[in-house]
Length: 223
Ligand SMILES: NC(=O)c1ccc[n+]([C@@H]2O[C@H](COP(=O)([O-])OP(=O)(O)OC[C@H]3O[C@@H](n4cnc5c(N)ncnc54)[C@H](OP(=O)(O)O)[C@@H]3O)[C@@H](O)[C@H]2O)c1
Image (cartoon, rainbow, N blue to C red):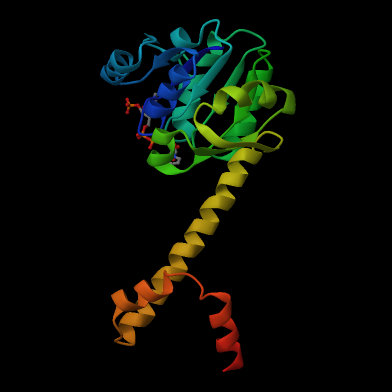
């Protein structure tokens, strides 16, 4: 069992950190708004720190899930940031959806201190975090990924390494591009149905029932 920290108890981080406790890990949490961290420890046990550095001291792995690139820089490199107190040989795992550039930048900054950095954005939404079934897409050194993987499996159903630093964020971008394309296609379809003045609800009900059974395809093909 690992001695870990979790930075950022938002919609995603709050339940993810809870799964770490349920899987037997010792968890210290940091949240910018302290009240959320105190609520979390009331519900889950564990400890609270008032700065990222305070939470990250002497930990095996420090997990993080904040908003964006700037937030991530603030909790790692800023005043009281995690990198100032993490020990050499420890691992920082970032679950924020951020850029590949910041992942590569922090990988290099961490390496100067002997810290490993894994970019590990997630998909699956709040329900995936609450139910511990997230998909985690990772970039970074294989050895460090393999060390952190069993701990990430506390909340991840699929935890995979894509390649070197930044490639987890690039994989998440692929995921977002695909979702964006699907949403766009559905919008076009609904718009077409509205313009054609057919009943959108009936059409959606029909097309969401999936493809016809094999026999019906054959019948359709014969027609
Ligand atoms: N929500 C989803 O369905 C979902 C799904 C997949 C991926 N994601 C990604 O996961 C990440 C977190 O999303 P979320 O929905 O959990 O966001 P959220 O509910 O807004 O939580 C953001 C967390 O980051 C903290 N934070 C933000 N800026 C900070 C700063 N400068 N310094 C310290 N802490 C800071 C917030 O602290 P406070 O409590 O003080 O505000 C909060 O704990 C994002 O990158 C998002 O794109 C979200």
